[in-house]
Amino acid sequence: MQFLKQFLFFLVVISIISFIDSYYLGAGITGIDDGNIFLNYAHHLAHGDGFVFNTNGEHVEGFTSFLWVIICAGAYLITANPELLLICFSLLLTTLVFTNIYRAIYKDVAVLYPSFSKYFFWIYTAFIITIGPSFVAWSVLSLMENALWNFTFSLLLILVLSTVEQGSVSFKKKSALILSGCLLSLIRPEALAWNLVFTVILAYTFIQNKRKLFFPLLYFVSFVVVEICLTLFRLHYFGYRFPNTYYAKISPDRIYNLTEGAKYALSFITGYQPVISFLFVLMTIMLLYAVFKLKILFKQKDDTLANSSIVKKFAIVTGIIWIGFLLPCTTGGDHFGGFRFYQHLLPLFAWGIIVILWLYKFYRNSNKDISAIGLATLIIFLLIIALNNLAELKTPAKTQMNFEFLLARQDRQLATSLNKTFTIKPSVGKIAIGGFGLIYEGETVDLMGLNNIAMGHSPGDRKGIKNHAAFNKDIFYTLKPDVLLPQAVTDLNEAHIVYFGLIDANNFDNQAMKNIFNDAAFQKLYLPVYLYDIKNNTGYFLFAGIDFIDRLKNNADYKISIINS
Image (cartoon, rainbow, N blue to C red; front, side, top):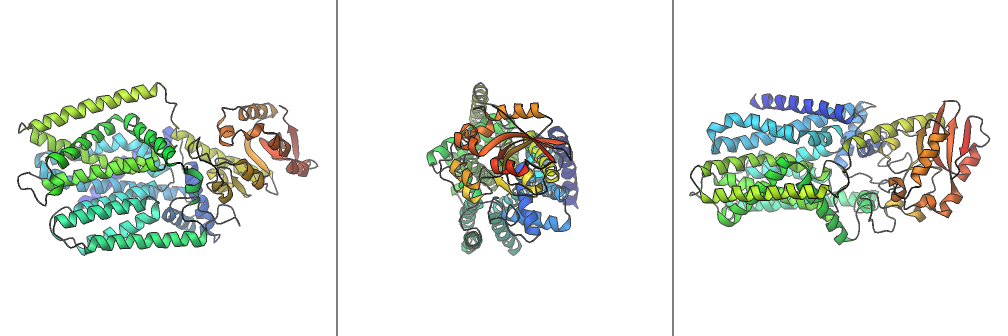
């Protein structure tokens, strides 16, 4: 009953944040563009087409979460428009994340400082509100796999932490650990690294508590079997070891990846949120204190130090945060706003409340070490704030989350309009293809390669615009879509404005496509046109292939005006 009350309260809090986010960002229920990519694959899977992006298209893994695609496909079997159902499902998972973490920390708060436990609920609620806006946007509204990943990851961590306590580990808990670890492998590729980390922690806690190492070994074997099966399936079905997104996004230059990843990590610490920056510094200093001064991690039991298991737990959580902080550095970070790759770490900073309580308890006993920890935390925190102010003098504006939602919604509308305009659907080349590809009834050609094997595996260094650097001109001329980058416009004048914006060297689309619009070879094959659909009274700017223009010239339903540069 207590769990249900807590769950319902947090459900109300997160629902309110979701409504505020949705209104402020203009999110609706369409999700972000990449979330619509999941829906595209799920729609095809639910209708028996397999893992394809286009109907009757090639087998391609343009997604990074097998389990989320399968769940979305299941939602399509229930309703033809599963967005609201998936958002509600994500809302429940997100609520479980916060409820489970609250209950795990509350047990330690009640032991460490019983008189404070009655206030902890409200402080924890304030913490949820603090991290809520970006966390809820990603976990609830995006239609991405974040909620599923956050839930499974946090549950697995809580289960692993419970093995710190002395005594036997129940069969039920062991079963939950193995199941969670195996599911984690099906949600994101980085689960392999995380499962290795959790195996090491399990081995550590079992050795510390003089348990046999059979279970950590069983855990290791279980997720390795899942990883092997997943890899064999990929090789058989798609022909490649990794998702197509890996080949399209990740540069082969490891130094470049580390450099870009370091920038991403530092921008999170210095620019995400002062509360998180403060807790990160505090928990890091306490981790160092626990390891090198208290030597708590290397002792089976320390009767001289009160609450030694609590110290071990927040030290392990801090270590997990650091590993999660560094992992994206290996792949070069991310381009989305809101620090998508760090979202699953945000709820873990609630363990910082335990750190503060522990410090307060021992500060009252006039421990000089505690004063030093507080001073060091304050100094480093202020330095981080200063670094953020310095970075903002030069760093360009970050990608805004509202744009990600707007992009999906506008491209859905564009695809709906083009479906009405063309009886015989031309192939369409696009850069952002999630919302468009989900709705458009013809072939969508992914110019960035995430959902196109030829472009995704094209030669190149993948340097430039993050996650948008796979475009290759030679591959493009092989794919040769009928039309390119269509946009709804009101008249010929607006079409001119769109065209001259695209050929600007600083234009995002032009940069992503390596300035192809100004190439002589491109200009021989494609012309910028204003296409007016007389029957539906709609107009478009687009680059049209010469052959496509010839097919429409004698069609009385269309008026084509070539834009002269």
